Amino acid sequence: MKAFILAAGLGTRLHPLTSHIPKPLIPVLNIPALFYTIVQLKQAGISEIVCNIHHHAGMVRDVIASHVFPGMHIIFSEEPVILGTGGGLKKCEKLLGDHDFILVNSDIIADIDFRALMLHHQQSGFPGTLTLFETPAAQTIGFVGVENALVKDFRNQRHTGLVSSLIYTGTSVLSPQIFRFLKTEYSSIVDTGFTGLIDNGGLGFYQHKGLWMDIGTMQSYWQANLDTEGLLRNLSTQMGASAGMQPHAISPDAFISPDASISGSVIGKDCHIGAHCSIRNSVLLPGVTVKPGSSIINAVVDPYSITIIEEPNQEREDL
Image 1: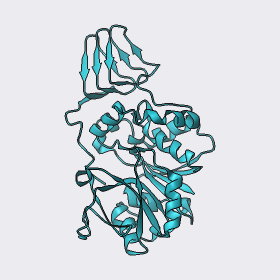
Image 2: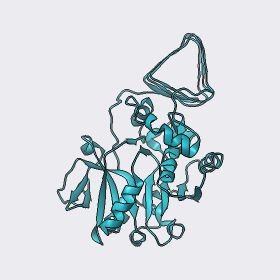
Image 3: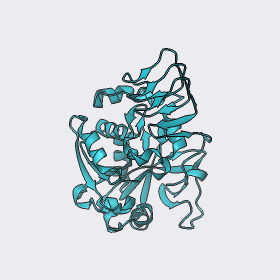
Image 4: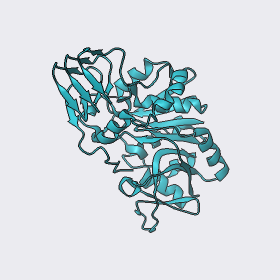
């Protein structure tokens, strides 16, 4: 089975970070976000990945090419004009072939059991299976309407009246049948492909109960990096075995003055922290210089900007 990773988005909700780095490469605990997904797919026995790219496409190519993922073959589908989740997938119809495939958004980090997901999908007999996750924030994030083991609606857009505490995780297993309903122009997979499957054969679901993090907003990105419950660090063994890298808070290639105070923070490669600085509950991307005596609290910082996090509990607002 092949996998398709949606990685072409502009990442507008992560601006200004995404003005100079594509969302899939923004580091989470000093590992590019996309790498978490690649490793999880590798662990599940997936060896072929199709990845659509648009924003800073050359950078995505270069970073992936510079890392070795033994046994993995990654093909890029570059979109000169961005096509959205629906059009981007439609463009790759021939690359994905005539078999079922896994689809994953690039702005999530999760420990979804892809083998169990694939088995569940095969046993269901439905042309598509979405991975859902239960959360009290479903009303804010975007709930999925389910009935009789089937997905029937999204945010009541189809006026079914079905409400749940389940959200779509950005991960699914789909049959080639979905291509019948996708459009070649810019479009949403929800409005085209998923709706088409709901009305033609049924759209099943698999409920994930483990780790799931959205990093699509500045608040959720900041929160994932702080990893206060150590959930991401639990993936260290897998990351080390499959990719030769492990999530870590302080890069060994950062210079930190002995007089600086660092607590609850992530410091990236080639950061330079001057004397008597105080860094607390913050994420410093690679290459940041902090002048002596500076104080940074509850912030996300790159070499060009600083964003103060004022609403750390804000949840994702789009599907």
